[in-house]
Length: 349
Image 1 (cartoon, rainbow, N blue to C red):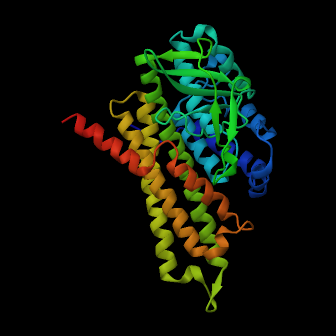
Image 2: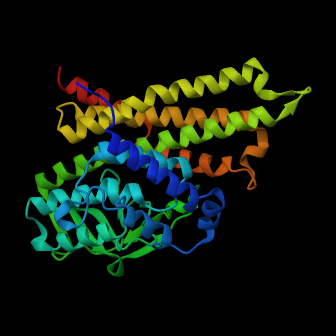
Image 3: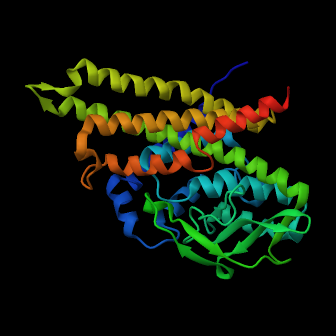
């Protein structure tokens, strides 16, 4: 068995890396803090590359690929702190809608949504089904919201057009995530699926979210370690670069080790989900726990090496710190996923 990305997957990743290096600089991320919510020219560029529609079925204009293909691209979005909701739209919403469309639900409403995602004309915000009513990342500015409500047959999944939702913005540590609390009224016209079917689709979405966000955290960790290593080579103390001091080397090496351990775990979980492995859900929780730990440790070390300047507006590091701290808790913290894994293991005893 050959456990490695194909040449095509690596070429796609490298092409996306080159585009993002030009289209999403640290100045662009700063500008996104104050920019109005909504689709951008950068989003259109990613759509033209096929990135946005990566997980949309070919019949609807997408590439019909899976998490294994998305993971290295999500890692690149983390590396540049991409302000757009690629992980939510492409990593969570598109495969969920594709599954529902394949099952013939929602009276044909889903097909046009998938077409619009693939073309870059639709962004989607997905509410975490475990905490309905909580603020939703990307809700401000989203074209479509996938939300959970309680119904007579159990929990229900609804697809709600932005025009039918009142979103109250919620302050966020990372303003580019556009947190908002949706106010809406469930109706037969918004209902996509309910009961046991809804639970199955929601559980799959939780797993995909854990892996996709985990991949994004890998990119953030890598970017912070790289940035801090460069800073340590330039910053002088006692007539020497601080990177020459053993204590600083150990800090950065420790963060790099955690990253290198987390990366194959995330990739392996992506493969497990794509292949339908019996342990896929457990693998997803392990991936999110490892990635969260690696990124938060990289953030801690990077801030310690930089000192107080690392959290100033002028220093690029603060952009990565804020995204890391937000994503480490999003869709389940490391502690949450370890508890989830333990519950799953004990249930099999």
